[in-house]
Image (cartoon, rainbow, N blue to C red; front, side, top):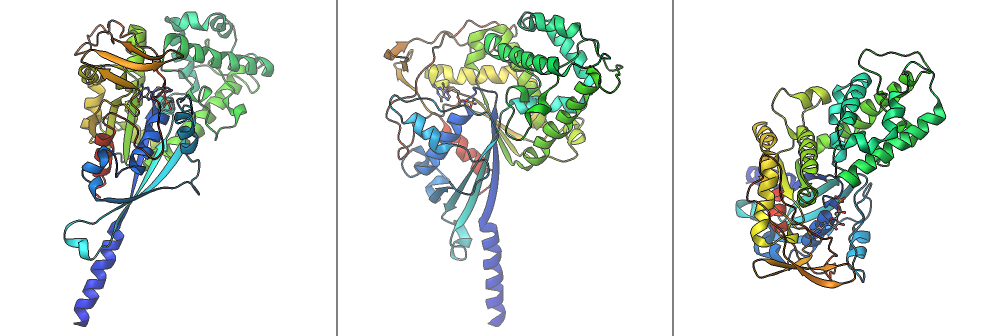
Length: 452
Ligand code: GDP
């Protein structure tokens, strides 16, 4: 009898150990992809799990309680501020992600099956790390030295639309002799001009690859003076310069950026992720046209390289560690802006754009799932063809979204879907699940990966 009591105790202890699980989910996407809105909605859906679509599906039908941790979270995601904006009158969209932030949510499930008697509860600690997708675009910098980066920037600036967007800055940079003594005041000025140029690339031409990414999204862990360097367009991989030269100064800052800022992010945060959600605003670039789609493809290919664990092991070699992301959800966002038949098409076009890279990621052992998504549905569907949403001062406006092809043509030439910016829907409240599209599918898939 003594023996069996011991055995029982041991099993119970083990079960308790199993009952505590941790799941770290990264959420990323380029600026404007919908990260802040998505995370706000995700917390809201979980907090209201017993009311919305979640209440009717596994494993949430076994979910007993949810606690969003508001204290003691380092670099906490501004959930309450975001809710404040969405439930204000008139409602506003929350402020976009500009830095890394974290959410911690404890979920307690009713246990299932044989362990039911031994294990009173089953806990899952869900940790969400929200970070700008642009930071991933810096990954390729890890394999470049400063001279090679200068060569690459010179190439980028030779082609339109960057050439025109750079304007006289390009001439100035082409006029700088890398070996000449640096002018510290001019360097500060040029850095600011480079940043302005990157901003124009993003806002005027819809370009996604804007380097160095931290010039636009510095994050709170980098001292501003460490971000003072520009590409010297006359320099190349064979260049050199004495101490105090333009070359030496810019090269030293570039090296710091590459070795501490870029590598630091991957080693401190990225390497601990179990699952990843990648959000993509596909409708914006489809609206902006071919150049924007081309650039989105290049940017997403660069982003997906961070999840490609197969191939020649580039990532592992560059990073000195093995990432362990098991699931990648790849989502076209804001699909409430088009009609139901088109929502699947938007996702399909996105997957067509990325087909080769997604195959690489799958081949490397990551489970990939594509899912069209709307974190907060801002429209009403009116019949099969019309959509109604709140626009500016006008209130509800009905519109017919333009054509979305079933597949993305190879030429990337699509007619613009002509979409206007929408306001959030009225009447959002923290204690009610926000209207959404397929958030439940996504959350279930992520959590399933942790087998609660
Ligand atoms: P972030 O920069 O990735 O954090 O993106 P945000 O979450 O700030 O979203 C950018 C903008 O996209 C918002 O201000 C909204 O205008 C729009 N948006 C985001 N999610 C949705 C959605 O689910 N539906 C609609 N209609 N618009 C959305």
